Image (cartoon, rainbow, N blue to C red; front, side, top):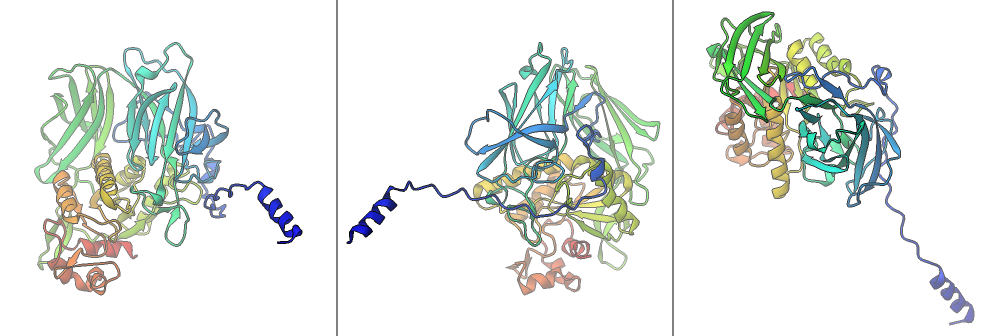
Length: 512
């Protein structure tokens, strides 16, 4: 080897070897589209409406607005500083968040803000989250409060013991991890690299965050199941904290301003008679109001609609969908609930209601809420405006024990959250076979857990035809999803399924 070659080799060996640059995050699609409601969003007015219409309180504090944020590696400790600004509850990837950045599955998103110390007295201070995608760890004044996994249901922490009573302000920190399509959790159509029918990921807080001060003994949940055929309603009130007595609760049901049922007793009540019930329907979406008060001083309000849904044979012996004992052809749209400016989060409450209003104006009576769960106020608008809803469970890979466990836990959370809304008439656990597993068990469980609604085992195609499993790409599956193949689907539906024509009805709704 020549002397020159030796020198060149030596120089190459001497040059320090730099680590390869980190892989850049997925590019955010270059869009600046905004809805007309975006102009109404300001840091001091972000979704100011009370976020939980079926369990409302007067004394609450909205924590929406400007927070600070930081992004770290997934395993890193709390950051020393939070330099970024984000408008909560808009996802960090969205325009309306003011951040517009991506968070990878290997990173963690940290939120921070302070809030004024409320007057709690001898009561409790509750911290509520409408939804956080996907894993949230919450700290108050540097102390761990709790953790939650699941991107589509609300959760609450009692933070009373973490508050510094002598301090003017309290610190709230939320650490979020969201694996999106790199993980085994329900995510709907979120992907890290949007393409085709798959959309921008949604990381972190995407629904309202709020505080409530309550007495030591307080109402934590209300479940309402109407029974129109028997002219009665079952109302179960869950109570937390303190000591109760057998008659420490009063419940009043009103039709308009007139009391139609009043009962004093324990939180778990038997059926209440509703004389001459005013039926809820798309043509007449009448809502009864409910007021619950405890001896401790806690008072909450709720509502319900008296309606029934069933599959029955008509005069010609053909299975039909019956609402309130009458056949009703359900004619509607598939609604995915994405916003160009807020992604999962609508800019305003008016915007949230707008699609439902427009759907009614166009002459439809049903919306299939597609692989997404909306904030509670969306269902409230469907309830008050009179729009039937077929509710999908957001899909995921559901591979292996972890994926199946996440799906099962989050499905129950979604049912528990939404089951009192009269607008929802059907559960759809699987969309087109995405992440489908244990279908028979889920259908059986859903029908038992919530017998007030129909269950469409899987949208568009039947699970088995002539003893053979269907696949979305198979010729038999396509035949089963076509309206002309109703007899094939009817004869091969899952035992225990609520609707022989469920697959056919879903196809009509989702292909308009």
